[in-house]
Length: 167
Image 1 (cartoon, rainbow, N blue to C red):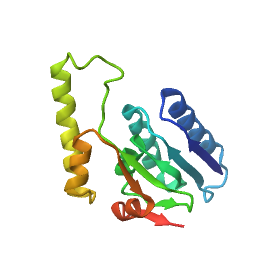
Image 2: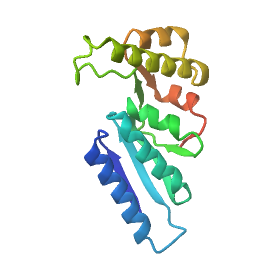
Image 3: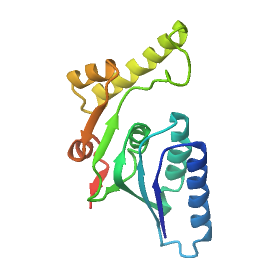
Image 4: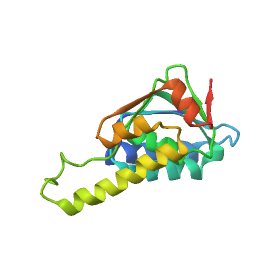
């Protein structure tokens, strides 16, 4: 059984993904046949990370997860939530684009100092976690603090996440 997700994390794409996982798992008559999920994302809504990671963790004994292409933005966050399971990396996997969260395009937050302060607080926590736990350098943390993107290539991602297994 095979399922491919290579899309942005939106309500519709995540719901379709979760439905497809359930459908494939419940229709499987052979318990030894794992569902192979080939996964890649350009990112998307951070609120949609949990439905994906909770589903994968709940059925970890019946799923084999493969990374294809990229795990950008929210995709990197997915990797942070799945460190307790083996994840297989295909030869097509390139890496991850990492950045702090920002909602400037969705809201007029320049006028909302309270929201900006809250966003800065959570971004600072995110950067500190990367520095403390994910081998990000101080210079890279400073880059993220300035709102820039950080591109981590395949080898760097393999180093950061020891649960990733090269195929």
